[in-house]
Amino acid sequence: MEYYQHEMFHRNAPMEHGQSVSEIPSCGVMVVLHGSLERYAPPGQGRRMIVHLPRGRTMADLIDIIGIPRQYVSFGAVNGVRREMNQELKDGDEVALFTPLSGG
Image (cartoon, rainbow, N blue to C red; front, side, top):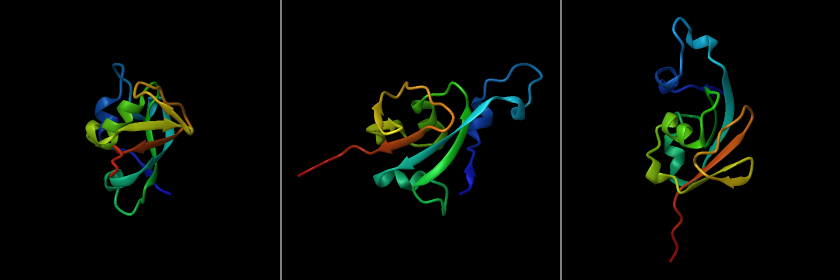
């Protein structure tokens, strides 16, 4: 599995004066995209990918980094438990993102 780092990682990373991108503490999270969200995965990646992001980022930040419009995500789960979008992510977390559900 390839590692995915979106260009926003570099733009949004909180850097101090003189600090390089490689010095920023980061964490890797496994992201599982459900439903139509799979189209936001890098080509050939499928619905599962690892995303590295700066420590202290939330599920909402992750959605922005991947490039998914927030209104397309109904809810998310971290390590199998439904969480709010302000949930801080930690190294090794598995984040599942879901589209709004509809029925008939």
